[in-house]
Length: 95
Image 1 (spheres, one colour):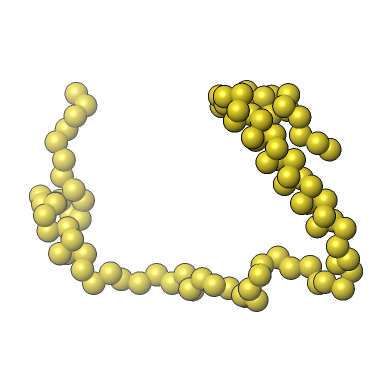
Image 2 (cartoon, helix red, strand yellow; image 1 turned 60 degrees about the vertical axis):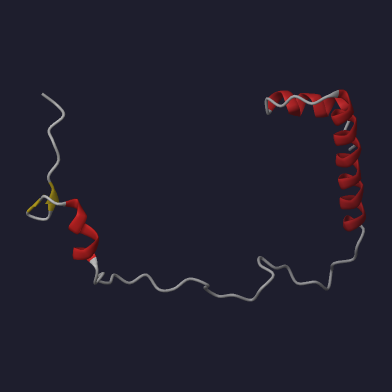
């Protein structure tokens, strides 16, 4: 399927983008080049290539989610005084 100038204009309108006529022509050419490249990739024999979900063999790249007590809470909250039983006291704004 080739990308036409009309398709570029229709997608630009849906995305609320405005392009000059030169930009529309350039986008049409570039999108068609991308589709041509994808067709070339589709011609490759990939029967012996195992499907992958990620390029790196990572099982879990995240640290474990464990609760821990932050040691500097008092120092962080010191400028926010006055506090009342662990809560911040703020001026009343609703009558």
